[in-house]
Image (cartoon, rainbow, N blue to C red; front, top):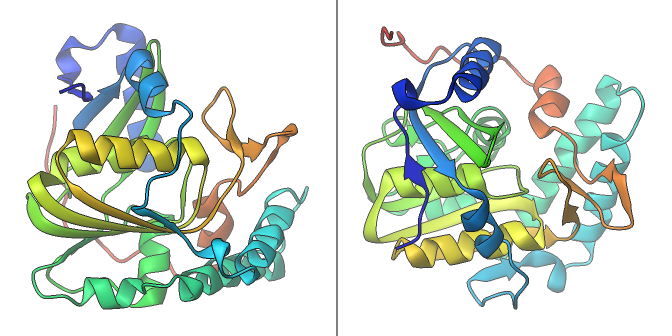
Length: 271
């Protein structure tokens, strides 16, 4: 099975170790799991292909989703964002969730469901949607880091134990690697997973579907709209205007107009 590799930080090349250290300092965390997606694996996951039936796109029947996406893109490309712009952006994302044929609240309420909402945008949106249960909800940091020879995903120590049924709420999917890393770490073969997101690139949606199949998971991806392309840094951009981002950094955009995240408990000591 061709999947990503879990790496031991002590064996990382010096440049990769420095990248990990820098990201941990920036986000005030410690990555207890490091998952490496090599270039050949990424190329195979992102290869062109037909969108499978388990990728369900709301905009196919709800053109209002595309209108909300246009508002999101307009705010993302403003030279300066005011609070009113940020609130408009956040409301557009929440509107898109409301237009999905299956609601995240319903799927998260099924007994035995574990919910993951990655920091920051996943956690913010999940809180607004009311889908983070008290005992079976986690908000791990999951950060994508460029390294020589692919992408490295760091996931911190708040990752839940392996689950049989999982709901993930996240803002957008670009390359898909952060969510693929969490699928690999959180689920056993045969588990059910539903992912709810406002937007995905076509390569990102295909990668999630293909990776779930490799992990022998039953996946349904509920997405508002699929569009755009991946640039060299794996950001979602306009295909005919690679300097124009589709969504920008969702967490940076909405966090100034939402409450600070609640304390997550004492962090473990680490070397």
